[in-house]
Image (cartoon, rainbow, N blue to C red; front, top):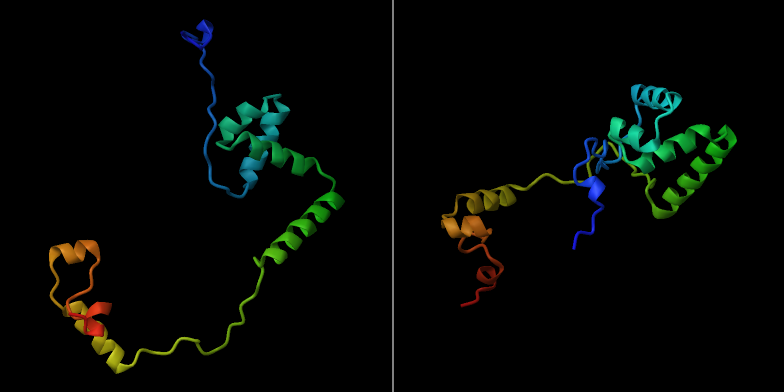
Length: 143
């Protein structure tokens, strides 16, 4: 049984815009101007979203933000920053002049070179197996 309305099977004008899966990105000045122009021309959210290659939610949220009074924007920014602080997104890292990492010792460099130069089979390379003598079992002296 056909669950689709017959009128959509042979539409001369199929739906113009499909939802786009987009990564979050900042709104540029050119994009904001195009949004304003499309809204002034009376286009609906779906058309604007397709034209700007944004989701309908992104377009609705941006319009809502632009129409929001400045004092409410400031409140919203403060709320978002409070959430980010609570989650630790803004934790600062103290940078010192000296790096916290030490330089490799000559023995560590020699061990690295020995690992890299040790013979390995194609299977060991493909599967990520350590070279003979360098696995945890080999170092433990397992039979």
